Image 1: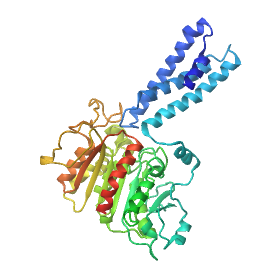
Image 2 (image 1 turned 90 degrees about the vertical axis):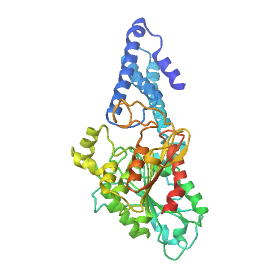
Image 3 (image 1 turned 60 degrees about the vertical axis):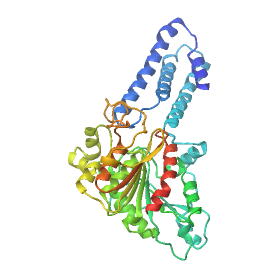
Image 4 (image 1 turned 30 degrees about the vertical axis):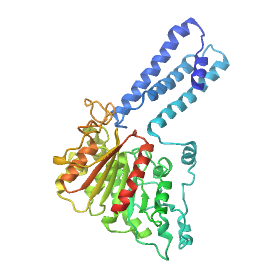
Length: 435
């Protein structure tokens, strides 16, 4: 409301020429700019879900406010110039708020401030503090920042984090515990599960009711930078897959006494990370045995199929097939001891697995999307998410056909961090039990 009032005051009544020519031109510039922004986002495949209308409105208002400042700067009073300049950051703030409401990246001001200032995470301690905590039986687990060498992958990455449950500190030496790799979405930092998802209290609560035991959680960097969409594959955007499998996993085993047994390693991923969770598990059953895919795609996606091949694999279609989970599972044949869980949005919430002939029961109706637009253009998945077809359902059907035990759990929610956090809470007992 403040932004609207300031913008109206900045525009003002002024002259007839201003009202009839320059104000309409400013509005047209704003609408055109918002259209180009949407065209760019859709063509780049930055989201498989359409952005809310409010976001495009505020982008249009922001660009229009810039036009008002530029076109109306001459022959206007000083105070109106100040208001015109003030309207721009206010409009940007409103656009950012609309964006945040869409993705739920910062649920609170506290989490936003912590991210901006790089403040400490819940339960965070330094690695140098671990020895002093041995035998203390802490009431909560501890989060430790780690700098994992990239000797095997050459993948430049940021600081990653390890959650150690209370049971890790109980005896004179660390026990051998299972481990879960935690992978965030396309735009991410390794701390997002803890800041935006706020899952540490959930894990601590689980540990408090299970004799201090949970798997070790490893919050990895799959992108190397906030906006580097690797989809956890090796390619022009970096050897992300090698980093996760050849750098991270051996480091956690050697430095934190995690089990090296693949039956005690799992992956939980959200959005892009959900795609990674499926892909890495079916490609490396010798390293991982369980996955939780929270609202992931049918496979690594960076636009249309051809855009994905060009962007992620340098134009090599054979490499695309190498990382396509459906192709991988079909080529591999029957798996042994591998299980998966898909958490996805839908109404009403319903649990089910593949039934007779791989078909799924009714009473599940996902929000409808147009089937006419391919992935990366129009904000839709390559396969439309309807109750007949969808990434989770199709992947689970294929997994079942090759002896991977899987189920799809749906619950009401949008493609937000809040849904990811709820899905994690729902899936934690399942994967802990599996491992």
